Image (tube, rainbow, N blue to C red; front, side):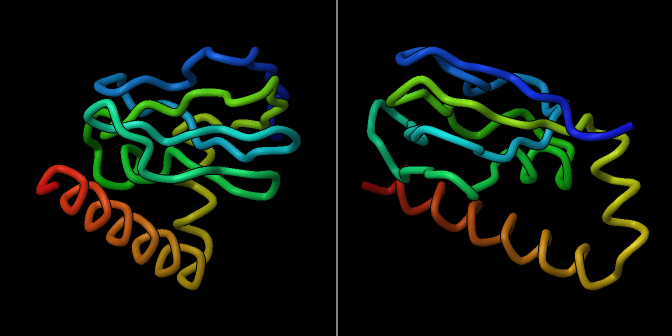
Length: 112
């Protein structure tokens, strides 16, 4: 199995706050906003990824990701993402670091 292509039109969320974490996403083209509490807390551009926090921590999505432009993405399902992490201690460590940074960012956004 490999990464699956997806297209998201401008203004559409993929995924939304509270959704079940079932996919890891990578941005191919376009831009997205990470939205929490009605505020943009991050911008994602080509090469960025998202969704690892819900997969690694087994929690619902902590933010919505909304297309600023039409966006081409690739996604991996949860099983393949976690299998890939388990195969590489370095990848697992980096993914955990990124997830911790996102949790910290989310907490800072809620305190504003």
